[in-house]
Length: 166
Image (tube, rainbow, N blue to C red):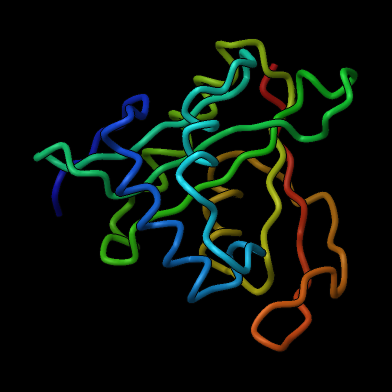
């Protein structure tokens, strides 16, 4: 199994991030986007100006992006500033290689160091691999909502996970 490392994302990584995400948009219910967002969406994630906004990538030995994770606003109201929502996506060719177990803890450590108090994650169900990753990274399932997303002609439940960082 190849070694993977993490680092802050850079402009040069956006094409790989877009490719990974667009595959998820078009082929899974891991995201409820129905159309791939444009590059400006990802530039905003890269350039986030809140101390809790982070975009990290996992790279192989050749520095090729094999996955990414980010934290972003949970809700736009100021009382939520120290709570951030997280997302993680792994290139389909590299799933099952332990990248999530390297990448997600790096994101959570970065979030904690920047003063984030609470991390929350929303998982479209069913997704046993994502649930297992979140549990292994210290998240707790705090609830589930029935049929809140509609994609690929089916209603999809979502589960909420939470992890306290400080």
